[in-house]
Image (cartoon, rainbow, N blue to C red; front, side, top):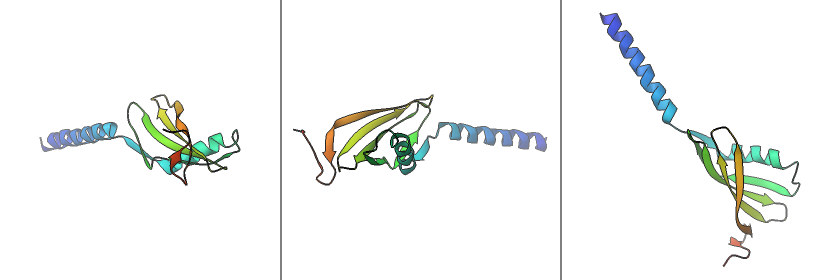
Amino acid sequence: MVKTVATIGFISIVGLFGLIVAFVPTVADGRVVGADLLSTFKPTDKRLDKIECDRRIPIGIDGAAFRCVHTYTDGSAVEFRYTLDRSGALRGVPVGAPFVPNHGTRRGAP
């Protein structure tokens, strides 16, 4: 009887742990994501100097949404909003006009 109760208790604890792990989002390090994006885009855009993404990027069941700033060798930068869907497809959309990060103002912004 005691072995049966212990076995059922063990199975319940493992099942609960599995449910918790399944619903807690994975958090990616933005520095790693930025370095990966830079290695992907650098061969096709030689002007690209660095990519800095949100420090913590939560990846849930439906994917992820985060932002990155692409900085170019001339000092200009463009902010991109990225989405990562469930299948792993990454899409990036530029936000606003290019800006110079040292000045903190966007060119052409009202």
